[in-house]
Image (cartoon, helix red, strand yellow):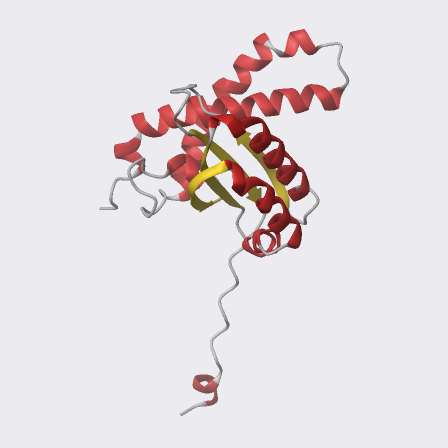
Amino acid sequence: MDNASRIPSPARAAAPPRAVTVLIARRVRPAAVAAFEAAMLGMLAAAEGFPGHLGGQLVPPQEAGDAAEPLLYHVVFAFDNEAHLAAWQDSAERAQWLQQVLPHTVGTQQLHRVAGLDYWFAAPDSTTRAAPPRWKVAVVTWLGIFPTVLLLFLTVAPLLADWPLVPRVLVITLLVVVIMTWGVAPRLTRWLHPWLHARAG
């Protein structure tokens, strides 16, 4: 055996860490809505102080529904990698806020975690199906963001012309995220589903 055969092959480069989004669904008693929202907003604010925090949002029910039925709320937490997400989930601050949230909820929470932008592209009837190839995700994301940003620059941006730069960018990017997440992306991924999830030949 020659010396070359004894040289170990170089280890594969570690994959770069991916952002992780946690989607949580909770049912809330109608009489406890105000207290639940206050507690959840407190938890979201606490998460902002943790390393790697990318954002969070409380999404109220779209319809009021029956006054006697629990209301379905969604909560989104995003961190830049799994380690920072775990640090938040294992923290004493989160545990304290959970103690304030839980008395206002009904049943157990439903939790779904995905990496990067994959939650836009997951199959609607499955939480385990693999996301499409990243290049397809990039193409569909661009197809949604380009017209959304163009529309906002033609309609909203002129109204903010006298604002300082940072608030203008904040408003525009916030609108892009909201429109993409709850409007454009779900429709694009539904229309392009056969192509996104086509098996490689």
